[in-house]
Length: 233
Image (tube, rainbow, N blue to C red):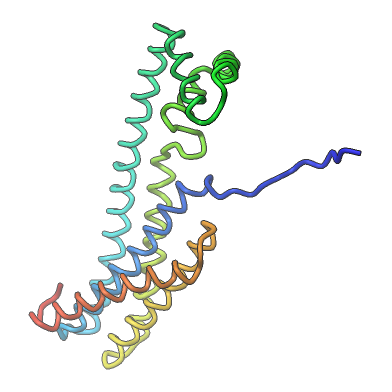
């Protein structure tokens, strides 16, 4: 007796848009704010100046991330829309050539020529533009660009990430500020890398190590610059 139970699979590609922006924003929030705080502290600035610099970095960074992500992803969306418009015009002007083009794609993927033409014909009858967008252009509903979503996710995650070293800065004494911010930020980065890897289905240890390494390098360089020049950086 054939089982009628539906076979379901859990994939993570639908998370790519917001996950990439969120991880990038949180990582930048932690790294840039912690590095700035450590650099300013290494330059022997007062505790109040360090805290004010951190707050300014949070606000400016969140706005910058939102604007940059929106412009970047919107450019991708504009390119996708231009390609779809071009493909729509080609379908109206020369549907037979487009049919052959789609069939050739399926042949390259392993279908027999006759079957490839049948598949192309049926898919084009159902949704010609959707078939060409997906199989010829690589554009799908799951992976298409969403500028507003990316901008909001990036700005919010940057602010949350920046708040972590900023909170440690506010609670730390001047003597322990640099080691406290550096150590706690590395812990935050390791957790972020592990969580991001887990959400994306990758190895958590690899994700944690990768993010922590670059964060430590950024803080070390900024601290060195601050100590060397004795100025706010």
